Length: 250
Ligand code: SAH
Image 1 (cartoon, rainbow, N blue to C red):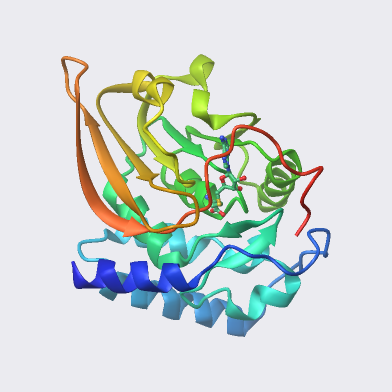
Image 2 (image 1 turned 30 degrees about the horizontal axis):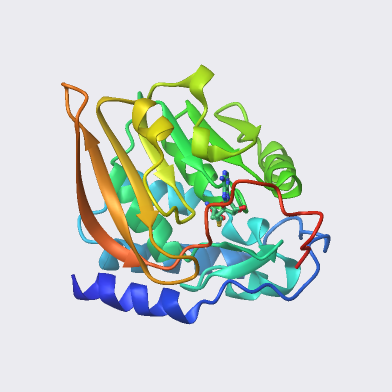
């Protein structure tokens, strides 16, 4: 559990404030250094996320995290750091992405839903593990940007995008085997519970805005009831009910 506490402390330092403009160009291509840095990150994740599978790690080896970050932040892409992606939102630090992906134990046959596309990094990882991945983003320019990057990388045969309020999940595509919420809600949305298959798993941070909250692992029983337990703590940007892109750019 101590690693979780350390990761939570790192996250706490990570106030979700972005400084650069959203429309900076994203860098194309990658250098041998970036490839090596990613290998080193994968090695470190293998050591620090207890029980993580080789299959999950191979997803982290495949996805170039720097391409989901602003040019000025790409030098820290393979460190355990969050970064601003515009509109006050953040790309989550790799340890937390790896830990949450590991907990959901994504199978090739799973239908997967992510709420909070953000940069698109987490959904890219999920898409490596399941060809039936779905992601919903409430801030239109972010959803569109992440889709464009994933188009470039050839990922979108496996990832379906929606712009809208993820509080309501994605009913037409459900039910899902696995749901991952990457923004903090003040309660577990009933539509997400409804869209979880019996035997399915959901990870969701619940807590006050910009403060450390609990990450719940929710299990839907065969009779439709749910069980939940706290698996970690962390600070996530809040689940919002509307697109704020007209008011806030950074
Ligand atoms: N998974 C992301 C993390 C992004 S931060 C990544 O890999 O980068 C969380 C994201 O959740 C933000 O982009 C935010 O705009 C989005 N979000 C907040 N409320 C939402 C809602 N109701 N529906 C969908 N997305 C939401």
